[in-house]
Length: 190
Image (cartoon, rainbow, N blue to C red; front, side, top):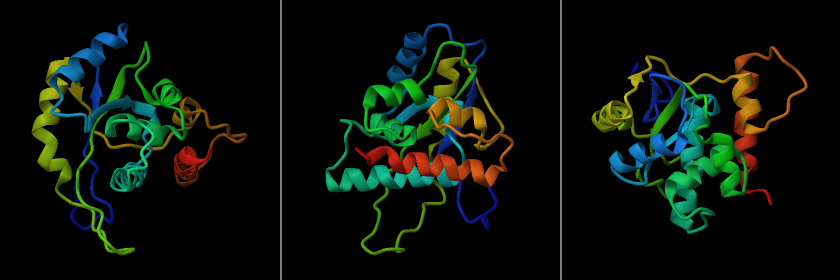
């Protein structure tokens, strides 16, 4: 990653599966057996829009952890809930979890960095991706997958998977990303 880029890479790695997922429970079981902690998760490939989307979702997770206001009982489930834009854990797994036929996913690691005391006083840790890459490589190997050489990009298919209804198609990427961010912000609306 270019050190001059305004937002560092989030610790997320795209993984291509050797064939479409047939047995979700089997993939999740292997992942859960080998992941270092519940701060690691698998999410559907399409539901991640960008580095900003990931860092913003992570920031909301950390705020919830620090204030004791998480809906889910674990950081992995809470992250899925937030990125899914829902207050319901089961709906989060339905939207952002693996499905039969998926050919790719994101392996996500959730840093435990402290947020800081004042507004604007937080600096995103720039080495999070590199620091956790060895563990991600191991997980990819255990899943029998291949690392994808790309970073998240917003897509209309991802919005549909998340349940975002848009009346327009062919939107520019920045507008699609806005939809992702707005949808994530709705996760705590009751």
